[in-house]
Length: 222
Image (cartoon, rainbow, N blue to C red):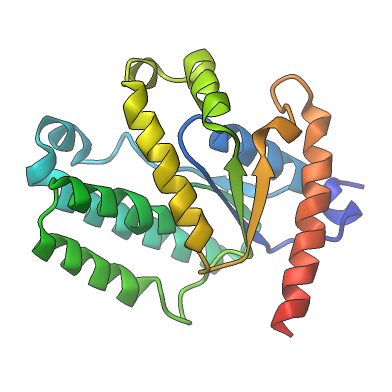
């Protein structure tokens, strides 16, 4: 018996993984998908036509980049639900507006007109009863010190060279975002409660928590 059947998790469930850089979203996505017999959905970075331009000129390309991300994530969300579910998704569509587009606006790398246009489009596409929201948003969290240590140990070279002040700001923005997020049910998991790198079996208590959480969330909807 696999863990999905053992804990009574639906075959067509959709679980989205969220959290700041360094918390291990990709590792959790793969481990959880394997444990549940789900498919994975990862962000397509290599095919993004705006990414290089954006890093060369934030102010000129931030709006284009965010619109591209919104369109691609919307299409992926639609594909997942048309397929019939059974997915673990690395990164949510909600983080784009709640963290990144807002950060560009507040830092002056996206003007007010572009920001308001982006928010209006996001709300029209996503914040409606017709948009297929995930069953659970699994938020991976830990102390700022834990996150920085993981970036130093496992992060990409570009991440390791990024000033610590940037990661501190990103950490605070994620915490502020998740504390007011209510688009779908949120289950918070501390990154110190498991070690998927050294102990693959540590995924089972997480699956058990997800199962209990999904059942409780379903009862609240009834």
